[in-house]
Length: 140
Ligand code: NI
Image (cartoon, rainbow, N blue to C red; front, side):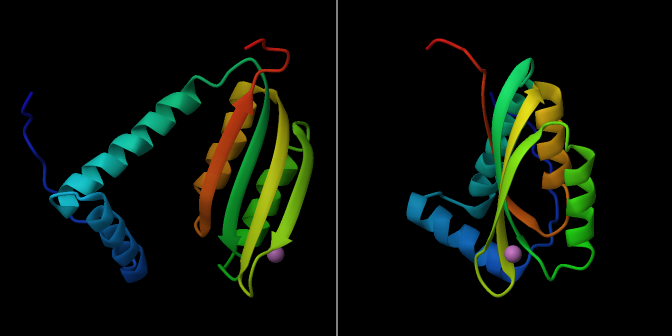
């Protein structure tokens, strides 16, 4: 079904746009707009999937961030301390001069596991956030 299109203006860092253009060229998108529409659909699908995370869960939350980003380290530590009750373990890896990776193993109510991920995801300078969860004891 054809829908009315809205035009938006977005400011992006040059390297992010270059990388995006590289991917949509490789994937054969007819235009940048089509690629952006698809990326937004994927973002919404991921959000919908996260909304369904509830009940007892064990989650793996991974993220990378630039530790030189002003204020990020203290915000991140604040969030992590807020959720100590569900944090079972965490690993920190220094990837390069500025880049860090963290992997958190979370266990508890799905809403809290998801809430932790969403809070961390929204911090400026945090990249590549990925949450995977499993229901303990679930038979496949
Ligand atoms: Ni580090």
